[in-house]
Structures are given as C-alpha cells and as structure tokens.
Image 1: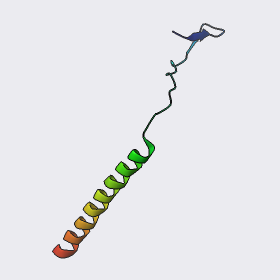
Image 2 (image 1 turned 90 degrees about the vertical axis):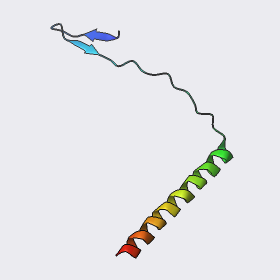
Image 3 (image 1 turned 45 degrees about the vertical axis):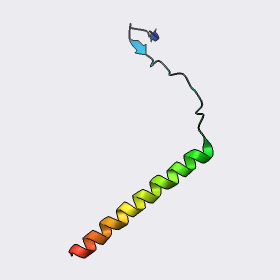
Length: 56
C-alpha cells in the first residue's frame, strides 16, 4: 500500500492507479452501429410523440 507519513504521525493514502490502455475498435463498423442505434432511437421518439399527439 502506498502512503506517506507526515509530521505528527498522520498518514496520507494514495489510490492505486489503473493501467492505461488504448482502445482498438473498428472505426467504420462502429460508426455504422451508432447510426443504426440512432435511427432506431429517433423512430422510437417520433412514434411516442405521434402516440401522445393522437391521444390528446
């Protein structure tokens, strides 16, 4: 455990830093997936607005 001791016996604890890594993603495939999810979300929101408009 990492800690330092100050004058008077107080201890300062330091968090353990996680390892840093770079993400390896498929750029084009990931962007296409985001577009599909955004399209489905947009259709869902528009459908809910249409239902609310129809009910009122």
